[in-house]
Image (cartoon, rainbow, N blue to C red; front, side, top):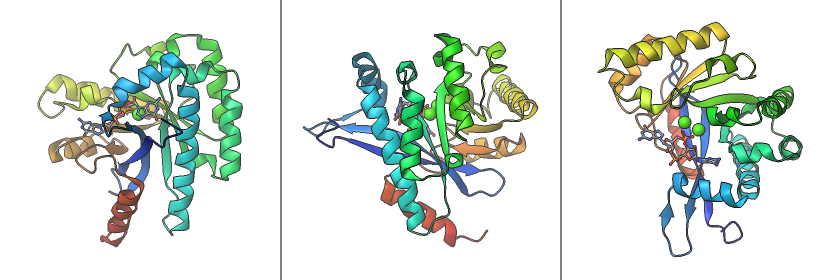
Length: 249
Ligand code: C2E
Ligand code: CA
Ligand code: CA
């Protein structure tokens, strides 16, 4: 599929609560098969993981993302932060950190514009090795994000040993945040935890204006979700950014 160009990437804007502008984008992988079927990443990523193909595809995802970053800068847009998702399997590879650092060096992208999203499940296996790799990635200047926070077993005691810059609140908490008092309280508690740990907070799966207003009220940093934009092709992202630049500040 990689050789047949069946994979592509889409990019979902992450909007600053303070400025209302796009400050980052998350790269999301898409697969359209030769007979034109679109398969959901929730289905094909576990297969890539089981077969070990995730190493090559993950490499491709980072390589492409860095190229898109550079192309947008060449087009005159201010440099944007790009996040990519990592699979636990990629972390098991001995040379993973070296691979990442080589790709970034070749691309000449400043690592401060790169975020790697990891999930809590990644922390459940071979913890010391994972931490060592995360520390090395962070030393390179890359940002580390804890994705899907609140979905699984939030191992709070582990937060102390993980180097990370951002927490993403999972959609399962965002859903009903304005309707259910308990969910609102949980979101507020996570935001305050993030502030105390001096890390940023992004809320994902935000679909309504009511949710946006609520989240601005509890001082979350960034919002990602269909309310602002679905994941976009590279061309559509450039259009989105252009429109945003033309809007009054
Ligand atoms: P994720 O990292 O939690 O990504 C967010 C998912 O929520 C994306 O689904 C996105 O399209 C969807 N989403 C964003 N905003 C909204 C919203 O407002 N409402 C709703 N209902 N959904 C929203 P997607 O693209 O299908 O990706 C599913 C999962 O597949 C991702 O979840 C991530 O875990 C994984 N994935 C995607 N791309 C990659 C990749 O390049 N590498 C790896 N390892 N995993 C990936
Ligand atoms: Ca993610
Ligand atoms: Ca997520």
